[in-house]
Length: 399
Image (cartoon, rainbow, N blue to C red; front, side):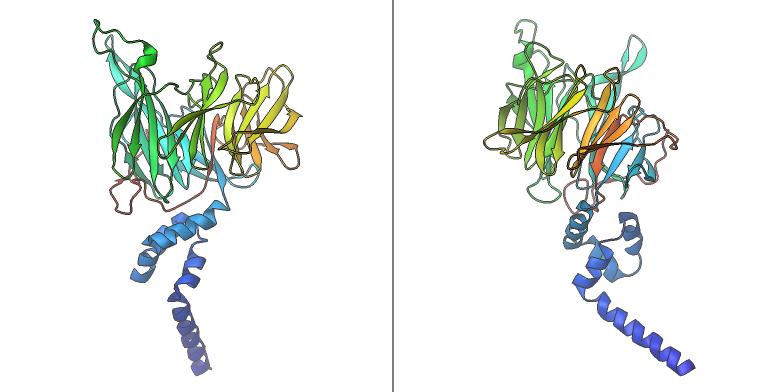
C-alpha cells in the first residue's frame, strides 16, 4: 500500500510539473485568480514570478478580468477614503481603505480604466492666516488599488481657476495621456487678457513622464455643481468626451467637447435640449447621454451610433422610480446597465429589460455613496511602463 501511494503521488507531481511548464495552460489557470492572490503566487517559485510579471500574462489577466467588471462606490469627500467593491447586485464583496499619499485633502476618483484609477486632491494654502484648500491647484495620481501602487504626477501649469482634467488610454495597453484645462495667469496689468484667451490645455504623456502645453483652446469642459467630480467626462473608443456649458445657462450642457489620443479637438451637437442632470457614460462601448428630466420624471438615454459622423439614437425614454424632489448625484454605466445614485436611493436600470431595481446598501457602515465607477482588477503599472518607478503605498496609513 505504501509503495502504491508513493507511486501515485510521484505520478501526480510529474503531471503537474508538465502542466506548470506548458505556459498557455498555467497562464490561463492563474489569470482567473484575483490580483491579490496573484501577488502572493509570485513568491511560490521563480518560474511563477517571471510568468506573472510578464507583459503577456498581464495582458491575458486583463482580458479575462474585463469580462467580470464590478463597481467601486465610495463616499465623496470621505476622510478615510474607503472604497467599496460591489460585485453582484447589491453585494459589497470587499472594502479597501485607500491611503492619502501624504495630503490631508480627500482623494476623488476621476475615472477608472483597465484597473487604474485617476485620482485628484486639492492642495493647501495659507489665506488670511488660515490653512484652506486651494481649488486652483490639484495633485493628480494614477493608482492601482489592488497592487497598492500610486504614481504622483508632476505639477501642471499655474491656474487662476479650478482646473478640469480627462484621461485618454491607448492605443497600447497601459499607455495614457491626461488632458488638463487651466486658466493661465495674467502676464501683467498693462496687458490684460480676457478669460477666454487665457484658457489653455496641457497634456501629460505616460511615455514621456512630463507635461507639454498645447495652448489656447476654444472650449473648456463645464464645471457642474451637481457632479462630485466637477466636470463629467468619459473615455470611449479612443476619445475623451466632456459636456460644454451652453451660452444661455452655464449650469446646462450645450454641446460636447472631444479630443483623441493624437490631441485632435472637436465638438459634437447634443441630440436635443438636456437638463442640469445630464451625464456622459460608456454604454457597451458606445458614447451615451443620460438625461434626467425632473418635471416629467423621465430619463432619456441616447446612443451615439457613429463617432466619425455623429448620429444620435434615442435608445429609450422611461419613467424614473424616484420623485423630482430627489436629486440625481451620480450616474455610471457597466455593460448594459446604468447605476443611478440619488440623494436617498441607489438604482440599477437594465437597458435590455427596461427594468429598475433598487439596491439595499443599508448594511454597510457608510450610508452615502455619491460616486461610483466601473472597475476591473489588473496588474498594470501606474506609470505606463514595465519598470517599477511607482510609489509603494502599501505601508501608509489613513488619517
